[in-house]
Image (cartoon, rainbow, N blue to C red):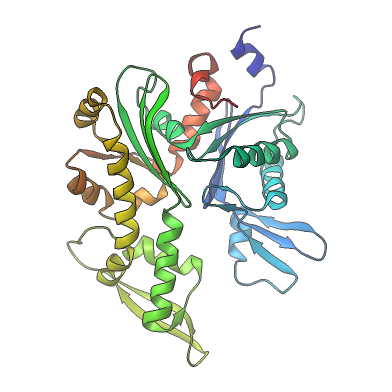
Length: 342
């Protein structure tokens, strides 16, 4: 029995993009079946999950004392083992895999800068959540596959995947990563910068969800043709009463500038480590942007200006990683080399 036959013996193999902001699950033969926030509401008294995903996120900041809203992922890796295991288990149960065909095998995406101990935690969480066997793949490799880059050919491809917890940068050739950079600076750091700005400048306390709305609504990396405004609602830190304040895109762009500068510097660092022949390929093909953070207005334009290289935005940046991992599931004989070894 060859590798593909062995891997396909159980029909409901799954690929998981276990992200800091969102969890996406791809089931072999069915495609993407879960795309929800990586959020869990947890009852401290009963030690059990109340809700996961979209339902849990709707409860954020609104729960009584005995119920906590938990984000079990931090900087692209598991921060709370017990809650992460239960979240994976509940998502898997929801999509009904492993019921008749045994426990599913899983491929889980991980940041390229993940440590050995973090790999062990991720493997353990997936196994405890019901996986029969666990494979790992680096997020930039999965993103490159999801975009359709020729990762198994002797040509250089560069992908920059900006998620919630990490920014993954890699130059890929012949099914391997030639140069890479992984920084734990991404979408969540942008949200935190906005929260701190609103607190210090406007004395307004806002939550993660409001910061995310501000970032999506008026956040930018480059000057806009027409500057925008957003009405932010929160609690006045001085009076302690509900308050709303109008903030503009020029202010938010300045707030986000240090985070964007760090991401661009990480891209330049990866380019500096790239062999000359592959650099020539990247000059011709350009840098491909993926991940939710790549949707920030003007980020592609800013990166192109700073690197003097073509920058291409993926068609569906939010799902590139899980679609690439799903591609490995569907054709293991071709892509098994891209999986991470122990």
